[in-house]
Image 1 (cartoon, rainbow, N blue to C red):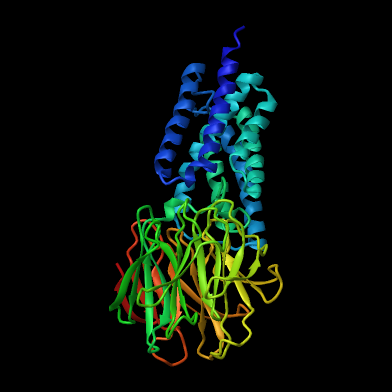
Image 2: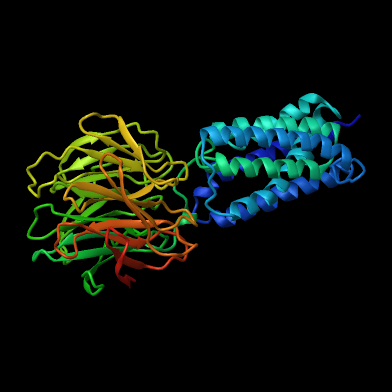
Length: 521
């Protein structure tokens, strides 16, 4: 008997697995990720269909039949009812029902059909070609491969293996595709409602990292004061290939005061901060290289009129994806950009670029952190300023938790803010009481609203508001500045970073009233 069918099946499984891992662990981080995704789907689907033709798979064997519908309803229906009940009961006790976008449910209904065809009619059938028809180990092998595609999300790997093993075992007894598909659709829908945003880490698979699909628009913002003490707003475009760090400084009514290009030899725009560093009267503006894959952690310091005061190039390891910067208490706080594998190093710099301290707190975040310090209640820069606030970079698995550390190198105290992932956008601000606090907005996921939350430094919520209504937003970028001299900061919102988003800047009072709005670019 020829071994050709076994060899074809073995190498087909090997090639398909290589294809999946190549995209999830490399391809999705490339700028042409959409093209690579299309290639992955075309080659993968071609491989599956080619095997159907080569092995002459019959529709009945693949579950495309109706003569066993009653048996399928009993078999898959019982599994679905029991599984859904368990998920809902655990979810009600341990989690919170939550659905950010109805499109998630619609997506997973179709996705369940594709996954079941892959599981039953490619992974399992090809494993049976190698091991023998009806061999129980074929179900285990198919479930194991299916689970491996969900690495490194271990809770999802475990859930995928268990579910796939049960579905394969039942399908071998009752080969009914509709039953297996609808069962997965219902159970996945329950998991989406209760566990997607917590235990299952947004259903994210493959190596975590900042991805180009969230680039292409929006605006980063910062707020400061000029030499006369008048407030200003700084804007820089969201990162994308070919986008330079065009810095524009506006007054609080949206009138442009100055404009220049920072880091002219780099693209993917830049990160921006404003604050007093003592180079002259008024606040300085600090610009760091944007999150491009080859961008070094280069930092430049400017006056508010655009004069280059200092360039800092060696403060952080050069691992690509630029840097993130903040200003607090007369110092610069810099962290590595959100590239794959970047660590949690936070560097405190003097205004001249001298490294004052290094911390690498283990807060459980992936691909870098962001950090700043809260200003003391008085304006004197000599006051102790040691409370470090640490939060996650805009990566899908990072929660919206804020960690606080006074002198400890590790993240000990923390509090939850928004019920979102993809990190957080955060600014320090002065509350109406004069005490320091923070304002936060969601990270850059399509559909995340411009929900603004104001908290004190113990995590107690002071206020919350939706800035405006737009279902296509990608969260918001956020800064703070006192526009009316009442010692209470107003909130500056930049449109969240996402494909095709406008360059709109808005200023709000802390009670949610919009004061002004303009397009920065």
